[in-house]
Length: 185
Image 1 (tube, rainbow, N blue to C red):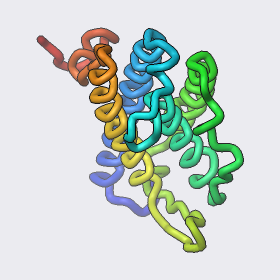
Image 2 (image 1 turned 180 degrees about the horizontal axis):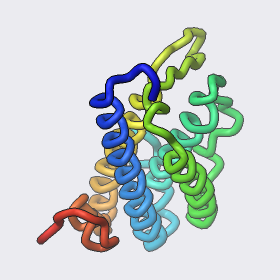
Image 3 (image 1 turned 135 degrees about the vertical axis):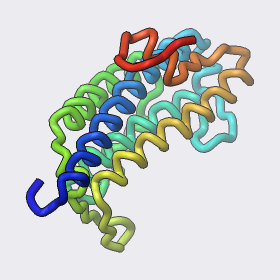
């Protein structure tokens, strides 16, 4: 990366590898949540629960919408088109699974193709009449947080519905998937 000290280049490379690991982790665990949601009766899946989004299915779909908004629109400097929002249109788990596979392939492919210098790329995007500028690194970390936040919310709502959430922490993921590095339980 031209113009950056070697130490900064090394830090960006290490950070990008950590982000890739987080995105693989979220992808893996997201599929477990889909499997848990598939076990719910349709009435429980779509029951309005007064959470951030009406139902557990809506919360799951919101995460997919967020990925689509950030990675297919805002990172390209475009306003997010609400007409293409999945929330409210996905009412069956099979449709959610299909959308998850599409979003997952796109996002993992994008993150895998990134170079360390891409973390510093400025993103300018319109947001409700304002122009916001950020670096791609912050958007990537924001989406890690976004998914974790809603996963916690899903855990609480699944417990309320009498279902066991598929809680999979980082170390369990490493063991289950054979990821490198120490993970002993």
